[in-house]
Image (cartoon, rainbow, N blue to C red; front, side):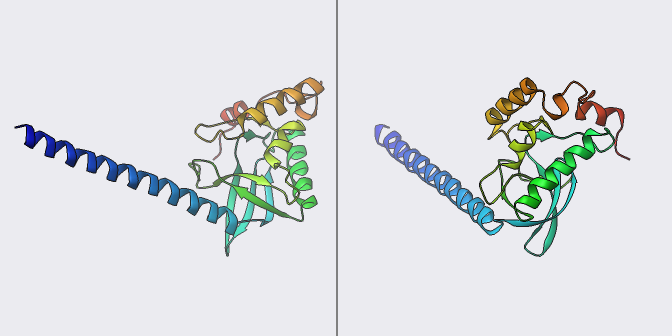
Length: 186
């Protein structure tokens, strides 16, 4: 009986080691494939800005809508803030040569099929953060995509304290998420 249990323990130990090895291999492979994807997508041409938190880029030979992670910009109907936010993002992108590097987090796409990404300029500016820091968007996170949440929180606090953009005295009267609820897409 002791020998049988000993063999069983060895088999269980070998199985456990095997599964740990497979899990580690998978994690490394997944990390490498994500970094290759980011590298291959490095500085994708931005062909249009839909609003303050959504752009269209060319990845490979395909046009893709990209939703900036961690932020929510005023909707275009939230006059004048929606238009201001869009123009500000356009100016940031134009300054970077109309190209941006995409950095992914955990979830790669939203329920609308848009790519979820952090956008970086060639000089290392995180556009998502700039939008919040300059009062052109608010913090809006969806776990598990929370890589820069602390930076975004600090940027929003700074923008509010300085009363920048949407935080000014004549600023945004209704948060974008509340506006969207009152004005659903058709």
